[in-house]
Image 1: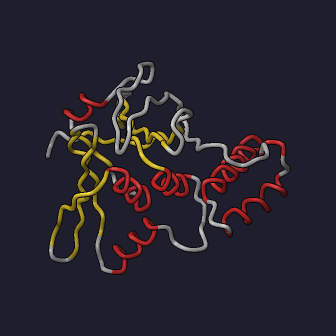
Image 2: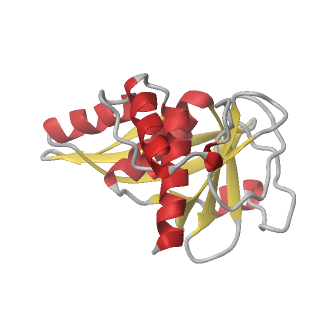
Length: 206
């Protein structure tokens, strides 16, 4: 397909109205139009952990899938979000081995979680961008993977605040200790939030 449009991942936003629902925001690589894809908690956690480079003691599902690809000599070349039907995005994984290329059907959220782990490009079609795309200053159209939600223009990723204390009030050492505990307890959403706060402070000091 020659008219593919490359997308970049802008981030994840949390729906404040409907618990457990997140919006994955993709944007044209050479443009401003964005596509919101509604995903669930598990998919948001998998993507957020990679974005924040949270190292988990055991591989998450998508990390396991990447290990399987590598161990069986398979390469993920690209992801193509090629259709939007009844509010659900359809995606293809383009995978190759020594025998040639294969195209595998996938949920768009799983495809993106894999793509960001191996550095594979993400594409869509002009038709999908036309149907689902919006400009940053517009209200996004409602596009769902599992349920409908009106989400947001927030430019950066942020998952829900589920910890009881305001992490911004904690010292760097306290945050580091809490990060280790959250990872050990497999509370990866909390770990991602703490890691984001530590990174923010590092950038401010730089």
